[in-house]
Length: 79
Image 1 (spheres, rainbow, N blue to C red):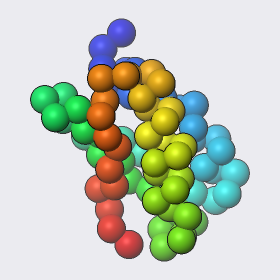
Image 2 (image 1 turned 120 degrees about the vertical axis):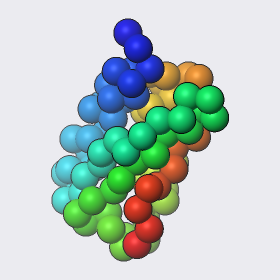
Image 3 (image 1 turned 30 degrees about the vertical axis):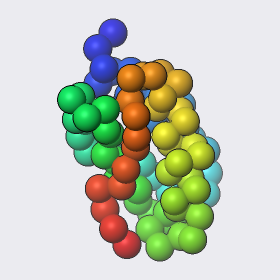
Image 4 (image 1 turned 135 degrees about the vertical axis):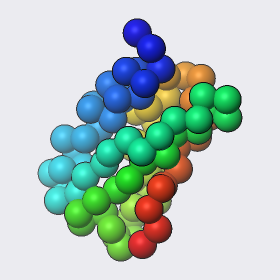
């Protein structure tokens, strides 16, 4: 399975939890050379004070579990 598919699988695992709180997450791009994934948070996540915690504690952890070569998950959108 390629890197893109594994990152998407990680996002698919965390997505239901984010959606339960009225938010959403989608993949923007992957920099394989840097080991960085950029995602976009949507819905209730925009402007939420816990968005950074969700990103690092939830999204990044889920992505790294499926694709350990990823070093960091960052936000593509700024609120």
